[in-house]
Image (cartoon, helix red, strand yellow):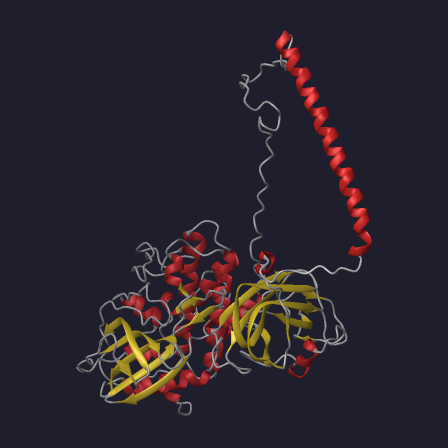
Length: 574
């Protein structure tokens, strides 16, 4: 990758051509191809997303098709967008055997330089909260950008199709997106096209943003106030998440707009039951020129303002799981001893009639015959038992020196093989973002001493580490590829709950994000130990122990009270 280019912000400002009047287009599908984004032609929507791009050159798109290979490595599979001289594809990286996304446009396209600059600057950010740019290349008269493909992620557009988000989900979305965009703007990067289809929720529940700088560069979108543009876009996302409505009069992104001639009304006036704090936060981000309703506080004009406003809000906890009492145990007729009898009508009590006795001459004879047979059977059984005991007593002295052997063909030999501990050869702390926790203490987790440990920092809020961090953890080296089927983890703190995930990594310093790794298993516990069992063993040399939730614990010699966790012992089994 080239060094960071300042052209990543407002990447199309230097074009100087007329504004783009694009028709409805489809998403660039940085991870979800089944839910395709649609733009709106309205001025209100363009204003909300900060559009104001350049006229597309009359370049003929390259003739590409499924099966075409780029750099003898990226095999194109499915075209998900073809618009304005560029196309976006779902492809396969045959070298690493993984799915990727690819944007392609001719090298002489009017926006080719801007797209390359934006892609390279976005790749240098390296923030896991964004869909990562993997490559940006110009060759054979083509410019193409390769990015992550998240098959388990779901667009916000698709999530809203079934209804508004729950308050906790909306809070997590706006919090994580605001923190991510604040970090991007600190590095001089803006999005300018932050729509519901650009925000994804991964399978682990984390929110990811795709198309940072690149999506705007592909469409020639620019803004004189990029921070204000991205902030208003975040407000629109929160408004849509709370109401399932787009906060402008025009319909957009599969959502209905607001009624005409009523203006911008607060989400809690559009739909009953909307969280008051989140409703006001959306209005503070959506206001224009600082004009707000009297009950609202000052406007948020940058993502940093949103981060500060969110930190001042009371934390919205996830809903408690609903407990459904088991149905009351009902005794059946079989248990009551009336199986096979006619069921009486309700309210009618019927006495239990004993079976009629055998009073006839034949019945008496039958009773005597059965009694005689029973007596004979008891006598024969007693005689055989006594004979067996006497025979066993005669052989007891010989049996004391005899060892039992098992035939190699015994069917019991086919039982499941017990798991065996796997030796750990080394470990390193995995830092996905931000600062490390305690990299010098990772060896304490497999030294065989329960008194030593590796610990996280203490956080003010929890138990979920996000948005402070997506997670923290350690990568263990097993020496060679082993079948990993379970793990036992000793914890220093109990309470609330601790959530731990195990992933198969490619090295001690993985080249892929957590979402790109193969999951081995997950466990949530409130105690001081955690046991992870895989539904199917995974063969790998490197295992990432990834913690996403930690309990609240009091202060100690290392840190003050807060949400934190420490690992004392780790044992893998296979």
